[in-house]
Image (cartoon, rainbow, N blue to C red; front, side, top):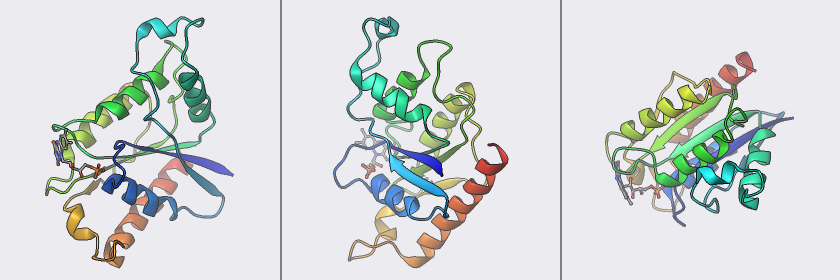
Amino acid sequence: MKKVGFFIGSLRKDSYSKKVAEAMMGMFPEGYETEVIEIGNLPLYNQDYDDLNDVPAEYDTFRQKVAELDDLVFVTPEYNRSVPAVLKNALDVGSRPFGHSVWDKKPGLVVTVSPGGIGGFGANHHLRQSLVFLNVPTLQQPEAYIGNIVKLIQEDGSIAQGTLDYFQTIVNSFVNFAESNA
Ligand code: FNR
């Protein structure tokens, strides 16, 4: 069984990013299990915590969980044209102590979600910049900029079939990519 961890860059209760992530989680084929990895409980990264006698328990749990994953999916809004601090904090926590990054070589998918038309382009590429350094090979195509998200959600809260079909295309492409990078 392959394990796919979802990292959601919004802590908002009614987050659109969370809704997109939940839809995608159900689209993986047999042989995959998906799980949201909590990032909102991680204390702000401080390099003093690299001292092994002073590691917050939440860091240990988080690093252990990420280490057990096969694949990574990041679904995030854009804050001020960049990556929300909570997600960047999680990347930093997982990257240390130096030489012990838990991200290394795990295939990744970047999905950005926005009510705006640009679809979180700035956050998408800032995140990719960090993932290059963290040695996370990332799906290039199709790019996943989910813009105008408010309009894509129907009155009853469901997501229109055409949009779900697009999400499925992204997931299928990622699964193929991840298998060829395993
Ligand atoms: C935003 N928002 C936003 N949207 C965008 O497309 N580009 C941006 O740069 C920003 N900047 C920004 C900064 C901050 C601090 C907030 C709170 C919001 C709007 C954002 O896309 C919107 O609130 C989304 O609904 C947030 O995503 P979730 O929580 O619905 O997943």
